[in-house]
Length: 526
Ligand code: SF4
Image (tube, rainbow, N blue to C red):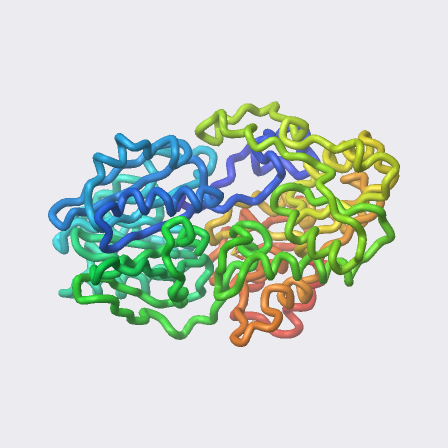
């Protein structure tokens, strides 16, 4: 993934309040962005095509670039390009990628990032042979690792932090490749769900916190042929391949597939799990099972809990499409208020560009969403969305509903207020640009011009993502609490617009938490 964020002088002086002036509508729905999806195939005659199908199902995790590396056992060929995977991997292109082992990557790149240069998979030649990596997540303790590696002779071909992992492997002194990989992974901190390949092996690993999902599946071999092993960021990628879900890669686990079969080892068992709860709120597809739990189940439960926590008399539940739909169904089920699609999304807007900086800046919300006057006119409407990041898009949607005749517009959000940026593979604005970090819920309600506004509580969110699970997950909730599960964070990014609200030395890390320390953070959130 991309290197740590930097804040330019221009950015450092702006606040969320300037939003209407500077925000391109490439924050189209004012959403956070996932940065990657990864895929791997071991033992299939058309491994590249299966990888392509998997990436096709993972396209929601990144739309700017895609890549596939494939091995026929002798040599590795890779191909990367800008755009959707279906635009890059046409039939003639896939025919140039023969082999039975493959890994793939789809990526969202941040502005200013050299997008094609940092497209993945990334390949490095080493004394252990060629190593190719595809990475979802963000490393946070880069520190002097890159400098140290360069002093040791490493030549970096990208500015991506993912390359640091392969360079660490290439420079490891261990004699076996699997030991080199395990040692390297234990040296980096942050979020990584990775798949790697050599000419004849596949590796899959998750960071010890287990921030990002990564699952393993299997396609049964026909007529006694050996099985095909599949790894993917989300299980929705298995369905198109008719692969059967086997299990999640565990936090801190390294899995290897070779001609000897599947082996597993742990490079870290000490760290507390902190899987990204926002995967359940927004990123992952509802038809995926992540962290051992169906996303659809979590999201519907969020809607039900939200209805119990902050019900309001109304005539119609309207989801902000598409990500608000499942929670809205849950809200309608619990409240008994009718559900309908009062906002229609145009799915064909927004893919006419390639790189973030090339986005057409005046694409308004109106080009993406249109209200259904026949449904909204004269109705008290509850809009269900999954987040308010800067607030401007929510305000436009509220105004749109009123203009279509809604008599009241209430906004309900299926997670707590987003008050702090993410450093673990999600592209978020700095704290000063997050409306909930700088305004109270009442002030946000006034800003978006809603009749009422309520968010799901943190307890309600966690309950929704664990309810009835026999072995519940422990989640990262840092963007709602400001309490980070890792030591390293970028202090500049977490300064609020109101400079005196939190000083850098008041930032609390999870391992420094006491009951006393937690309280003010929670109060900040709610
Ligand atoms: S900070 Fe938020 S978005 Fe980032 S990993 Fe934690 S829960 Fe997920």
